[in-house]
Length: 387
Picture 1: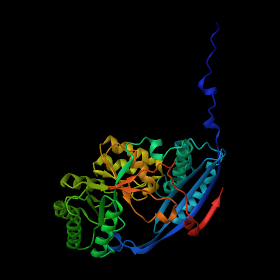
Picture 2: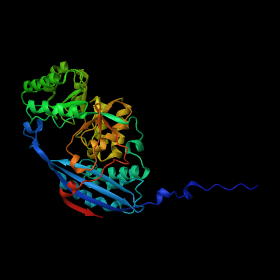
Picture 3: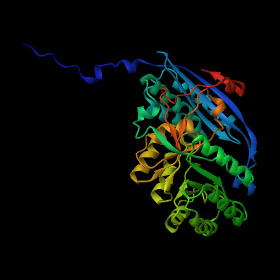
Picture 4: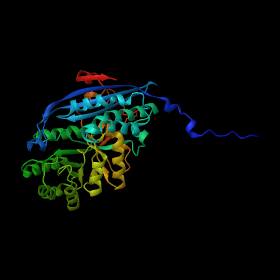
């Protein structure tokens, strides 16, 4: 009997490798907020109150009819810039295999490398990258969390949108009651006022209202200097906070590390960073106990997964910033302690809603991100293009 000579791997063409990206649709959407909101950056005069959020949406369709939806965003300035950069590099995807996500991320970042490989350039790529991961998970018939390899089917969640400095304390208390009744498990409020005594009074009032059992966080939005952060952090120890967020400038790795070593309360930071390399600088320095990457800001899910691996290597907890519509799936795929941040602001953009139960947000059973754009998103669209 003559044995059949095996075919070398390089001559075997898998069915998945035959698909190609047929079209990419881009849209710039401006979501208005119900009321202007302010954090510490507004009180220090560095920013104006936030009134709207600009979203860059990417919808990718393959020759075999598979589709994926992704988005990036910008608060205040930057939305038109994201859209313009995405429009320039989108043709790089046409004809490519949508399975090759990491290679396509490299291709896109180098296509615009003259303006950098982080910042706005990475954030524009994020919309494409998220759409490609959504497409892959939809094609597999799996929620994105399951495609990545989920460690849990639900994630602890906390609310931020009800605790801004522009809100009086009675409004914050009412927002807290509504959030807890909805099934949210933790509460975060903003601090960082010029008078730290006012911050302490607000924290004390909220902690008294919550009691000791409900997890509570505070966020200074980078507006303290090192001395103020240390003094105020010591005052905050008595409130048993889950973390103090962004007490210092986002790039002050040394200062955050000193603070993390000096305080019992965990430190959380990282939301403003725009690359995996920037996160590694903070992680190596021991600058935080909770790593807070933002997938749209770091360039999408592909670099976010690198940040997750780096954080896991250092045995750190994870609390992604904003965009729960993406981060729920990523947090579910992280092996250690993790939280997801609840903002109801984006809900009008999508037809679907996430389920909250007993302090946790449940990973939906729908394939991919489990999202589709609403008619309202179309009404708020100011620019669109299909390539």
